Image (cartoon, rainbow, N blue to C red; front, side, top):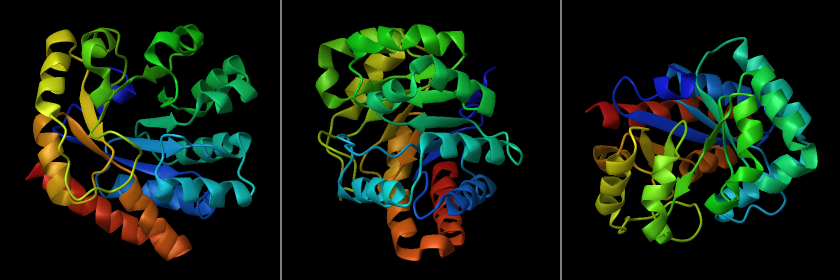
Length: 257
Protein backbone atom coordinates (compact mmCIF):
# COMPACT_ATOMS: atom_id res chain seq x y z
CA UNK A 1 0.00 0.00 0.00
CA UNK A 2 1.48 3.35 -0.96
CA UNK A 3 1.46 6.22 1.51
CA UNK A 4 -1.39 8.11 -0.19
CA UNK A 5 -3.72 5.10 0.07
CA UNK A 6 -2.75 4.71 3.72
CA UNK A 7 -4.31 8.11 4.53
CA UNK A 8 -7.76 6.64 3.87
CA UNK A 9 -7.48 3.26 5.50
CA UNK A 10 -8.57 4.25 9.04
CA UNK A 11 -11.92 5.93 8.48
CA UNK A 12 -12.54 9.34 6.98
CA UNK A 13 -9.44 11.35 6.07
CA UNK A 14 -8.88 14.94 7.11
CA UNK A 15 -6.60 16.80 4.68
CA UNK A 16 -5.37 20.29 5.55
CA UNK A 17 -3.96 22.56 2.85
CA UNK A 18 -1.02 24.78 3.80
CA UNK A 19 0.70 27.35 1.56
CA UNK A 20 4.46 26.87 1.94
CA UNK A 21 6.27 29.93 3.24
CA UNK A 22 3.29 31.83 4.63
CA UNK A 23 4.36 33.51 6.87
CA UNK A 24 7.73 31.69 6.57
CA UNK A 25 9.04 28.19 5.96
CA UNK A 26 9.91 27.56 9.61
CA UNK A 27 6.26 28.21 10.57
CA UNK A 28 5.09 25.98 7.69
CA UNK A 29 7.10 23.11 9.13
CA UNK A 30 5.69 23.66 12.64
CA UNK A 31 2.14 23.90 11.28
CA UNK A 32 2.56 20.61 9.38
CA UNK A 33 3.85 18.83 12.49
CA UNK A 34 1.03 20.26 14.66
CA UNK A 35 -1.52 19.15 12.06
CA UNK A 36 -0.04 15.65 12.09
CA UNK A 37 -0.06 15.56 15.89
CA UNK A 38 -3.74 16.55 15.93
CA UNK A 39 -5.01 13.94 13.50
CA UNK A 40 -4.37 15.09 9.92
CA UNK A 41 -4.21 12.06 7.61
CA UNK A 42 -2.57 13.65 4.58
CA UNK A 43 -0.99 17.06 4.08
CA UNK A 44 -1.48 19.13 0.97
CA UNK A 45 1.37 21.60 0.53
CA UNK A 46 0.87 24.55 -1.80
CA UNK A 47 3.85 25.71 -3.84
CA UNK A 48 3.19 29.45 -4.30
CA UNK A 49 2.60 30.73 -7.82
CA UNK A 50 2.16 34.30 -9.07
CA UNK A 51 -1.12 33.57 -10.87
CA UNK A 52 -3.03 30.90 -8.88
CA UNK A 53 -6.19 30.80 -11.01
CA UNK A 54 -8.09 28.20 -8.93
CA UNK A 55 -7.64 30.11 -5.69
CA UNK A 56 -9.91 32.61 -4.02
CA UNK A 57 -8.61 35.84 -2.42
CA UNK A 58 -7.49 34.18 0.85
CA UNK A 59 -5.09 31.68 -0.74
CA UNK A 60 -4.07 34.14 -3.47
CA UNK A 61 -2.93 36.54 -0.75
CA UNK A 62 -1.00 33.70 0.96
CA UNK A 63 0.77 33.00 -2.35
CA UNK A 64 1.73 36.67 -2.64
CA UNK A 65 3.02 36.82 0.93
CA UNK A 66 5.11 33.68 0.47
CA UNK A 67 6.61 34.85 -2.82
CA UNK A 68 7.40 38.28 -1.33
CA UNK A 69 9.15 36.45 1.50
CA UNK A 70 11.51 34.86 -1.02
CA UNK A 71 10.12 31.31 -1.13
CA UNK A 72 11.39 29.19 -4.02
CA UNK A 73 10.62 25.66 -5.16
CA UNK A 74 14.13 24.58 -4.11
CA UNK A 75 13.59 25.94 -0.61
CA UNK A 76 10.30 24.03 -0.46
CA UNK A 77 12.04 20.78 -1.39
CA UNK A 78 14.47 21.45 1.47
CA UNK A 79 11.50 22.04 3.78
CA UNK A 80 9.98 18.68 2.76
CA UNK A 81 13.28 16.93 3.35
CA UNK A 82 13.29 18.49 6.81
CA UNK A 83 9.68 17.52 7.58
CA UNK A 84 10.40 13.95 6.47
CA UNK A 85 12.96 13.58 9.28
CA UNK A 86 10.06 13.87 11.73
CA UNK A 87 6.99 12.34 10.11
CA UNK A 88 5.96 9.71 7.60
CA UNK A 89 2.57 11.35 6.89
CA UNK A 90 1.43 11.18 3.25
CA UNK A 91 2.11 14.54 1.54
CA UNK A 92 1.12 15.91 -1.86
CA UNK A 93 1.94 19.17 -3.60
CA UNK A 94 -0.73 21.43 -5.02
CA UNK A 95 0.64 23.90 -7.54
CA UNK A 96 0.32 25.00 -11.15
CA UNK A 97 1.62 23.47 -14.37
CA UNK A 98 3.84 26.47 -14.96
CA UNK A 99 5.75 25.87 -11.72
CA UNK A 100 6.57 22.33 -12.86
CA UNK A 101 7.39 23.46 -16.43
CA UNK A 102 9.78 26.16 -15.32
CA UNK A 103 11.54 23.80 -12.90
CA UNK A 104 11.65 21.06 -15.54
CA UNK A 105 9.19 18.18 -15.14
CA UNK A 106 11.90 15.53 -14.89
CA UNK A 107 13.88 17.47 -12.28
CA UNK A 108 10.70 18.31 -10.36
CA UNK A 109 9.41 14.72 -10.11
CA UNK A 110 12.87 13.42 -9.30
CA UNK A 111 13.11 15.94 -6.43
CA UNK A 112 9.60 14.95 -5.28
CA UNK A 113 10.69 11.33 -5.01
CA UNK A 114 14.03 12.14 -3.38
CA UNK A 115 12.49 14.39 -0.71
CA UNK A 116 9.61 12.04 0.04
CA UNK A 117 6.55 13.59 -1.64
CA UNK A 118 3.75 11.21 -2.63
CA UNK A 119 1.63 13.06 -5.15
CA UNK A 120 0.92 16.16 -7.18
CA UNK A 121 -2.28 18.14 -7.85
CA UNK A 122 -2.28 20.59 -10.78
CA UNK A 123 -5.67 22.35 -10.83
CA UNK A 124 -4.96 24.10 -14.14
CA UNK A 125 -4.00 20.89 -15.98
CA UNK A 126 -6.96 19.70 -18.08
CA UNK A 127 -7.55 15.96 -17.83
CA UNK A 128 -7.04 15.69 -21.60
CA UNK A 129 -3.52 17.11 -21.28
CA UNK A 130 -2.33 15.04 -18.33
CA UNK A 131 -0.15 12.89 -20.62
CA UNK A 132 2.27 15.81 -20.59
CA UNK A 133 3.14 14.96 -16.98
CA UNK A 134 1.85 11.43 -16.37
CA UNK A 135 4.78 9.43 -17.81
CA UNK A 136 7.34 11.36 -15.75
CA UNK A 137 5.12 11.12 -12.63
CA UNK A 138 4.91 7.34 -13.13
CA UNK A 139 8.66 7.11 -13.64
CA UNK A 140 9.29 8.62 -10.20
CA UNK A 141 6.32 6.98 -8.48
CA UNK A 142 4.44 10.24 -7.87
CA UNK A 143 0.61 10.06 -7.98
CA UNK A 144 -0.83 12.59 -10.42
CA UNK A 145 -4.06 13.38 -8.59
CA UNK A 146 -7.05 14.33 -10.75
CA UNK A 147 -9.79 16.80 -9.90
CA UNK A 148 -13.47 16.27 -10.64
CA UNK A 149 -15.54 19.46 -10.73
CA UNK A 150 -19.29 20.02 -11.06
CA UNK A 151 -18.55 20.91 -14.70
CA UNK A 152 -16.87 17.54 -15.39
CA UNK A 153 -20.27 15.90 -16.08
CA UNK A 154 -19.79 13.42 -18.93
CA UNK A 155 -16.10 13.01 -18.10
CA UNK A 156 -16.47 11.89 -14.47
CA UNK A 157 -16.39 8.16 -15.27
CA UNK A 158 -13.35 8.54 -17.53
CA UNK A 159 -11.42 10.61 -14.97
CA UNK A 160 -12.35 8.17 -12.19
CA UNK A 161 -11.22 5.11 -14.16
CA UNK A 162 -7.73 6.56 -14.56
CA UNK A 163 -7.44 7.94 -11.01
CA UNK A 164 -4.29 7.58 -8.91
CA UNK A 165 -3.74 8.28 -5.22
CA UNK A 166 -7.09 9.84 -4.49
CA UNK A 167 -9.65 11.89 -6.39
CA UNK A 168 -10.10 15.53 -5.46
CA UNK A 169 -13.81 16.32 -5.76
CA UNK A 170 -14.38 20.06 -6.17
CA UNK A 171 -17.50 20.91 -4.17
CA UNK A 172 -18.58 24.04 -6.01
CA UNK A 173 -18.02 26.12 -9.09
CA UNK A 174 -15.52 28.95 -8.94
CA UNK A 175 -12.43 29.30 -6.81
CA UNK A 176 -11.37 28.08 -3.37
CA UNK A 177 -12.71 29.86 -0.30
CA UNK A 178 -15.05 29.30 2.61
CA UNK A 179 -18.76 29.06 1.79
CA UNK A 180 -21.79 29.25 4.05
CA UNK A 181 -23.33 26.25 2.28
CA UNK A 182 -22.44 23.82 -0.48
CA UNK A 183 -25.28 23.25 -2.90
CA UNK A 184 -23.69 21.08 -5.60
CA UNK A 185 -25.29 17.67 -6.19
CA UNK A 186 -22.24 15.82 -4.95
CA UNK A 187 -24.11 12.55 -4.32
CA UNK A 188 -24.58 11.92 -8.03
CA UNK A 189 -20.94 12.80 -8.82
CA UNK A 190 -19.69 10.41 -6.14
CA UNK A 191 -22.06 7.68 -7.31
CA UNK A 192 -20.40 7.77 -10.76
CA UNK A 193 -16.95 7.82 -9.12
CA UNK A 194 -17.79 4.75 -7.00
CA UNK A 195 -19.04 2.87 -10.06
CA UNK A 196 -15.76 3.43 -11.89
CA UNK A 197 -12.93 3.22 -9.37
CA UNK A 198 -11.97 1.94 -5.94
CA UNK A 199 -9.57 4.88 -5.50
CA UNK A 200 -10.74 7.03 -2.55
CA UNK A 201 -12.20 10.49 -3.10
CA UNK A 202 -12.08 13.56 -0.87
CA UNK A 203 -14.11 16.76 -1.17
CA UNK A 204 -12.54 20.21 -1.08
CA UNK A 205 -13.32 23.90 -1.84
CA UNK A 206 -15.54 25.77 0.58
CA UNK A 207 -15.33 23.57 3.69
CA UNK A 208 -14.64 25.61 6.80
CA UNK A 209 -16.60 24.17 9.74
CA UNK A 210 -16.61 20.77 11.49
CA UNK A 211 -20.29 20.40 10.47
CA UNK A 212 -19.47 20.92 6.78
CA UNK A 213 -16.49 18.56 7.01
CA UNK A 214 -18.64 15.86 8.62
CA UNK A 215 -21.32 16.25 5.96
CA UNK A 216 -18.82 16.12 3.08
CA UNK A 217 -16.94 13.15 4.53
CA UNK A 218 -20.29 11.45 5.04
CA UNK A 219 -20.70 11.09 1.29
CA UNK A 220 -17.00 10.71 0.39
CA UNK A 221 -13.79 9.38 1.95
CA UNK A 222 -12.53 12.63 3.40
CA UNK A 223 -12.56 16.43 3.59
CA UNK A 224 -9.97 18.93 2.37
CA UNK A 225 -9.74 22.34 4.06
CA UNK A 226 -7.57 25.23 2.89
CA UNK A 227 -8.88 28.78 3.23
CA UNK A 228 -10.03 28.35 6.84
CA UNK A 229 -6.48 27.27 7.77
CA UNK A 230 -4.83 30.03 5.73
CA UNK A 231 -7.00 32.58 7.60
CA UNK A 232 -5.52 31.31 10.88
CA UNK A 233 -2.01 31.66 9.45
CA UNK A 234 -2.77 35.17 8.28
CA UNK A 235 -4.16 36.15 11.67
CA UNK A 236 -1.64 34.49 14.01
CA UNK A 237 1.44 34.36 11.73
CA UNK A 238 4.32 32.57 13.46
CA UNK A 239 2.13 31.88 16.48
CA UNK A 240 -0.35 29.98 14.31
CA UNK A 241 0.87 26.35 14.75
CA UNK A 242 -1.09 25.73 17.97
CA UNK A 243 -4.21 27.44 16.54
CA UNK A 244 -4.03 25.28 13.41
CA UNK A 245 -3.47 22.23 15.59
CA UNK A 246 -6.64 22.95 17.57
CA UNK A 247 -8.61 23.54 14.36
CA UNK A 248 -7.37 20.27 12.83
CA UNK A 249 -8.31 18.40 15.99
CA UNK A 250 -11.87 19.80 15.91
CA UNK A 251 -12.23 18.80 12.25
CA UNK A 252 -10.84 15.31 12.81
CA UNK A 253 -13.12 14.77 15.80
CA UNK A 254 -16.12 15.75 13.65
CA UNK A 255 -15.08 13.16 11.05
CA UNK A 256 -14.72 10.46 13.70
CA UNK A 257 -18.10 11.23 15.31
